[in-house]
Length: 166
Image (cartoon, rainbow, N blue to C red; front, side):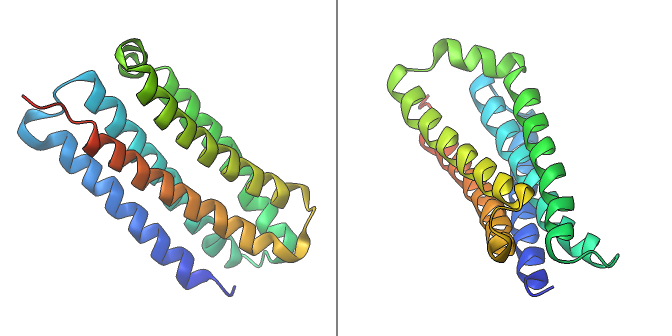
């Protein structure tokens, strides 16, 4: 597979985000409030999704899958896992508490950004799964991985810029 090294490198970058999120979570006895917990949980879960999705084609390619069969076998589980991450994160008490106190402007800014990224990831993976653009399947899958990494970085950025001053 042509992009195996790139996918492994992207998985490594996502792994750094997972480790960084874990480091934030355990510093000084853990996260201090629901706001921080919600952001860290989102960042770590999206980064974990990104690492798994990036490594899937590299792993499955070793079993002889290639072409549309490879990208289909990676895209369907990626979509299912993404749905699972979204469901689990949206049902946590921290996220419900965060939505109860977040400002409308912040919700619009961050919500719109996250929804845009999520829609783009789902669109790219759906195009691959449906086989609508066979020549572009590797590029679309790679785009979904990069967008997952971008979503992780944006979540960390939102956390950093939303920190309340004592």
